[in-house]
Image (cartoon, rainbow, N blue to C red):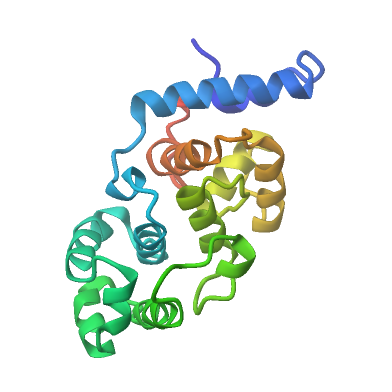
Length: 212
């Protein structure tokens, strides 16, 4: 039986060097992602605005609920400038049943502050209303190709189980993420970790037998 991702990375202490363990992990995870990764619309664009909309919607909301809302929101507000010109009430109505309407308000404020274009660097993105370190890292990574480290509870769970067999704190997960992510490949790496956490390495009843 093939070794799981965790076993491939951290079993048999001393048998593999850290460099070999990391290379093995990246190889197995990239093969799994190429075969089993989710086909999501926001992964097909590098438009910073569209990526930001997706990342804000995905905060505390399941992918299945975000999919139709994302398409409808971008159809109504296709650009940052269009969103900036729209009345807040219209934006909130378009946000609909996603919940946490403050996210829509913050997105609207960010558009009004930057109607021409969003900032590019993580530090500048961090200054936008409602944009925390995870979202700024995700936008810098997925829209601009920056090798940024960022982790939510799902990524922390996956990385923690790979490294220790249990979830780890977010700060520790981000440090581990920074050490492991492939240079120039931060986007596929994070997408793969997210998908592994959603489909295999779940919080409850993880499917360890099919882990890559």
